Length: 616
Image 1 (cartoon, one colour):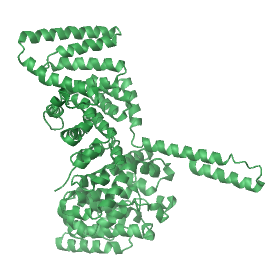
Image 2: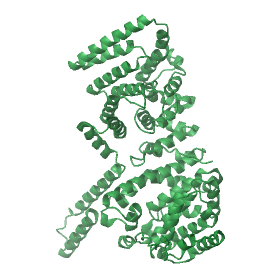
Image 3: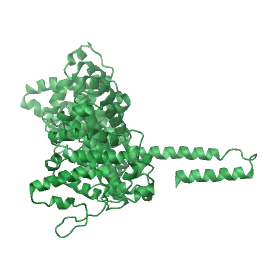
Image 4: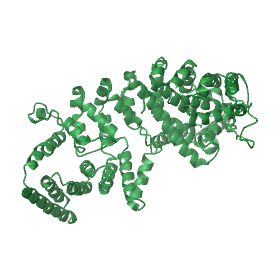
């Protein structure tokens, strides 16, 4: 079955200096007219062999001898195999001829033999070898079983520990995740369960800081050349390197989370995964715009909410539950995951009353939602979960801590139960009268609004909503949207989010009410929730086509800067260096009057060197 969605040693421990590493470049493939390389130990000539039995024999022999040779063309060969593995991951030829044993030995050699790693173009080899393993084990369980029998787990684990750099970690995580996703090979990964879980959680939490410190935050001349070549394939400038580094950092985090998901869905190591700090960190892991389809941190939270220990751990963290509520009322692609997570928490009687005060107001705004991500009548399911034991709350058998939650459940009961009953027996004449009176109240509300009497406008719109028949969805969309605008002017962000969400649920996902998207984006900005604000802003811009107002561009740029994947890492970097600057300046305030002239001269040189080291 295929599941869909630190170590302290690093490359610096090999004493690879920046100038040395910068010398390594991805070689160009020189070809003749037939397209075959004639200078790479005949591997590409072997591929052109027309006799199948001879071809297979030669390829198997080449894979067997490859780790024993010190050939400068190894990288060229691996680059070609990597391309084949990426385009034809289900082709059984190479997996059946010893490719996994070859790759495992090459990775081990790169990790243990420093002199070999620095020779020729060998520094690229561990990266390509890990990616080849990951590509061939992605879809086929039988290939994954061959890989495990070929002892690939231990070499991949060495890369996962950080023995080289974050670039190789990314490839190793991808391969490990694919091996862990198959039932046939999960047992082999489980043998290193504790170490893998600790490494994956650590990488997921710190990878953005790591990539920023080791690459993005450096000048072009300070970056490792082989990192730059791998990111851009030898083409592209500084901006392309930054974009690719952001994409790879997002993948590094997402593959860490996928590996954790493989354990969590089997209810393995939940105590290690459900640590408070890590669960809080998950709320901020969203993949960025460079990786919008990833389940990210919300996806792992959803998986955990399907386990008893996961639900209890999440329910005890108010911050995590609030984050799920925010995503459930946003234009985020993961909205359905957040809704499902909250519903799982409410269905469980152990966690229901721990989260209902926080979750009820958010989910109550979604009861008009129809279809979402292929699921039908989502709003009806939400309503049934919320009102499951409303009779206990109604008769005060159970008291909610939040008056707002109690009021929202009361409104929900009145609208979806009592009011539906009343409107079913209502005559056509009565319905028309209520509709007409609702229109009058709406007009009065608009007059109060334009007169600057915002509080009175809210009252009129609320009265109009109470009278407006439930079947008049378009009229209710306008009323909720107008009241959301009033709440914005009153600086009531929560009220604006609530009404804008209701208007969007009534309008549907296919054709969302654009004004409500913009109002909710502003409200989230008011609350300091940049990601949710950005998602709504993007949805609003998509609804407008090419005609984007200048005020929308302003908030879009603001939220793009706030939600940049490396924003936190950059802030920490500046903070750290400011502290170091203050420390160095403090040293220069030492009373040096009693020191000799020679000693004072030495202190001056030392301080200047330290400043230059940290700030150049």
